Image (cartoon, rainbow, N blue to C red; front, top):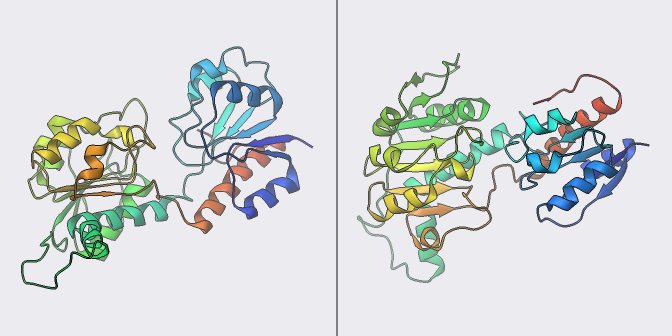
Length: 317
């Protein structure tokens, strides 16, 4: 039986399915793998199932061309924590789990849009602190999203799912910035310039992949282009936003608020962000639903089983 190493605790359904086909070694900690652990895993196991935080850098793959592991079956759609070119050079394939995460992640984007625009986090804290004195006509006035413009940066599967929710669910006009035009099932205008999209949007939602191409894609210049009443939502990767620039823009009142599910140096969240009432902070909940995590795990296993059987990998990256 081939050896499979799973780097984090998984739902029982996924573990049971894995044990049907592999001899499974399950790491019970939820912390990222260290370099030595990653290199050992490549030597000891036929397939490794890593996830976000397991930084398989080029250095990890040095001297691993004869290693036992021939596949990293990544648990997650994002794979910017893996140097795919270095893995490929060492003869190690990489797969991911697209599709499974789309709708759940789009739901979190919609939730953050509403929470930020309607000051839901601030209101909940007010009630919990026992400081709410009752309804009044000017209490906690936020931004009504109906009829407003949603600007989406990145129009892949998740971006399109967000667009459908924004347009059909909230009645928003949708604009998007993407490297190429998309055939869409809802009205949406492509905007060539990122700054132009930021200027024209009431809510900007980031849905681009992580990696060197998108790191600090949103910085001081882009934030300065936004309207003072606008909100920034990030469900992509934390380092897509220059966090220091975002803090400065919020402190200066350049934008009205932000809704964040991801952070530049996860799990560290700057004290400045934690102290701001106009920032909604979530602990990377994008795919945090049992059925979604089960589907992700089963998709990662499908890639591992295809590798085991010598078939084409369903989700090679």
